[in-house]
Every structure is written in structure tokens, then in C-alpha cells.
Length: 303
Length: 263
View 1: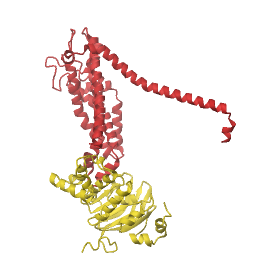
View 2 (view 1 turned 180 degrees about the vertical axis):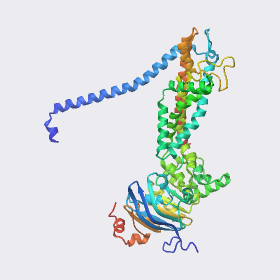
View 3 (view 1 turned 90 degrees about the vertical axis):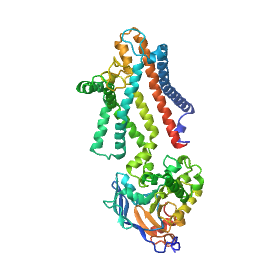
View 4 (view 1 turned 135 degrees about the vertical axis):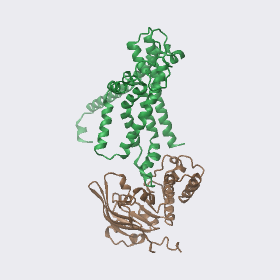
């Protein structure tokens, strides 16, 4: 028994203890509530969109071309364009971002050049997407005379997502323990052999997860595309146009366009349906990222 | 004829690695202070000393592993068959091909047992499936692992036990056919049975290779090594045949350590 404990009466100690217990309980409830509100928000949001949009969804809506004036248009070409621009963007983004990420993580020694690359990537990452869209408008649409094209949109999205994928690559590689690299180098492997045969395969799970998550973000991107890929699907030709030089309104841009400027009488219905399809697809990307990540890391540890 | 000298440390052996005035710095901290050592061919040389004495730092200097860490500086000379491995025109990758290393923590790659065993030959350009299979079997046999894994060569190496993983890492080095094998406390994370398997293996390996092993266990050094070097706080205090070091050390500090008066 210490002197301090002796000096306090039994009752006052009991009081202090119960106050502390109440504070602890309160903190637990508040923090639990905060965590729950995230789940509730998402559930409410998804539920409400289903309530609004589920009636619109039909095979016709998912495949038919949009209508300019009359009701009953679909979003087929927009879905196609969303995937097409996503594909083009990934073709440009993945090699450049991964190349830069591998360089910075595995090769670069601290110095002026490394600092410059990091600084540029961070600056690029902070540019608002609407500003990037404006840049795309100036360069691809006006300067190069491409007009509104899928390619211009994809290149703008590439600029927008390079830094994020570069960071994903760096973090994925950083998660591979040094001892793996040393094991390879100690067998007389070169740096590149070590990266290609040991480091990249070991980082496959975080890399895949990161790439799919970024794909989901690209799929839902809107502001950067309004000025670059355009707000209509290519007129006159087939709506499913594989040429990268056609106007290519995506699903998210279509959602924005019908809600703000659409002339069709069922604009709200089309908008709700598009929003639901977009949401489901973006959520699907997130689920896919988790499943792939878990599957790949599982395969590496035990077959 | 040859076998008559093997296992007899006093018999003359060629000097395989010659370390002269080696200094290693981590930034401003000097971890190895002007150490010189001759490593004889086809013998096991043990590096002993208390934790933090620099034995790991020393062994990593012998195949230029410090090149991978940006703030480590190595000065002095390490000669392999008389050629300085730190000379300007020497490629560290080719040095590590000739001087392999096994680490304290078993570090199999997240690949199959087969792919681990043939990693070295693969990166050095062997393509033929038949040849790779031969190398795989030969090195796994030499590492006393073949019988335990021959039926599951294409399963993940990460499913093996700690001791098996470490023997796989040794097999992986053997497959490269190096001249020298460096081992940094290869059995420190293993149970006694796995440890004794590794020790038997090391004794067999010296028929074909030169072995340098770091160990914190004096018993292990006494059991398996022909020569022993004692490190203390970055200084190489004394080196001699293992029986000399353990029975009649010349330096008072060596004696204090082997009789248990240091950590």
C-alpha cells in the first residue's frame, strides 16, 4: 500500500473508478458509431440508387443507343466507351507508371533527379481533374486538331492517374522484404533479374489490387473527359466504334450530361439508371480488387 | 590422396580468400577496424564473437553484399585466388556467382521448390528442362533434402518447415556451383535436430567448397570448423585453428569469451 492510496478514502476512489469506466464506455460507443455510420451511409446510398434506378434497367436500356429527343434511349455505346477509354488509358498508364515506380523504388539513389521526379509526381497528383480536362482540351482537341476523341480522353486520364499508379508500384515493391532481394543477388543475379524474377512476382498481390482499384477510379472519372472525349457518341457511324479518333461519351459523362443538359423527357429516369449501372460497375472493380489480391497472395503462400 | 588432408586443419591448404586491412563503415560508425584474415581452401572457417562484434558485417564484405546498401563504405582488399574483388574493373555480380551466401533467416523465393533450386542455373542461362531437372536433383541431394521433397517439387517452397527451407536455400546456392559459400548464422533460427542436419551438411560441403560461417554458438564452431576467428567490437582479435582457439588461445580476451566471461 502506498501513501497516496492510503490518503484517499475508499469512496472517492470508487467514484473515480466509475467515472473512468463511464468515459471508456462512452468513447467505445462514439467510435463504434463513427465506424457504423460509414457502413450505413454506403448502404443507404446504394439502396436509394437501387430504389430510383432499378426500374430503368432492362436489356434494351443496357444495349440500345441513346436518344436525343424522344424517350426510351439506352446507354449501350456509353458502356462500351467507358470500357474502351479505360482500356486505352491502362495501355498508356501501366507501363509508364510502373516503369517510373520501379526506377524510383529500386534504382534511384537520393539526389536531385529523384527529388525532381517525386516532386513532379506529387504536383501532378494534386491537379484537379477539371483542370486536367482543360489541359487536354488545349493540347489534344485544339492544338493537335483531334477534336473530341477517345484517345484524347484516354491520354488526359493517363496524366491524371500516372502518379497514383506510380505510388502503388512503389509501395508494392517496398513491401517485398530486403532479404528476398539479397537472396537473389547472392546467387549472382543482376538487379534486373532480381526485380523481374523475385521482386515483381512477390509484389503481384498488392500491384494487382492497386491497378484494379485505379481502373475503377478511371472508369468513374468525369470532369477530365467532358472537354476531351466529348458529350456525344459518334454520330453517323456505328455506335460501337473501335476507332480511337471518335467522340466517346462515357457512362459517367452521360450521367452528368442528361441530368444537366438533356432534352429527353425521361432524362431523370435515364440518369438514375446510368447512375445505378455506374455504381454497380465501380463497386464491382473494388470487389474484384479484393478477391484478386487475396487469391494471388494465397497462391504464393500455399498451393 | 586428397581425402587424407581433408578434415585435418593443420595440413597445408591453399589460401582461397585473403582479406587485408578491411575497414567497413556505416556512415560515421566504423564496424570493422582494419581486419586481416586468410581463408583456406576446402576448410570451414568460423567467425565467432558476441552480438554486435562485426562478424556479420565482415562476412557480407566477402562477396560485396554491402554494395546493396547505400550508406555502407568498404575499404581494403579482399582477394579471391589472388584477385581483388573490390578492384575497379570487377563486376560484383560475377563475384557473387563465385561466392554464394546463405542467410540467417531462410529466404526461399515465393515459388515452387523446383524453381527455387534451379533459380541460379536459370539466371545464368540454362534453358534445357532436362539439365535443370538434373541440377535440381543433384543440389537437393547434396543439401540432404531430396528424399523429403522429391514427391512435391512443384509445391510452394513456403510450405516447407524452417529447417527444410534453410536446406533449400543451401541447395539453391550449391546449384550455382560457387567456389566459396558464406553462411551467416544459418542455424540460429532452427531447432536442435534441424541444426544438426545443417551442421552435418556443412562438414560434407568442405570436400567441394570453401566455407565461411558466422555463428554465435561456440559449440557449433567447435563441432564443425577447422579454423576460428574471434571478433570483438569490430576488431579481429585472434585467428587460428579451432583447437588452438578453444584450448590455448593467445589473447586474454579470446580466453575470456570462450570461457564464458562475455555475453
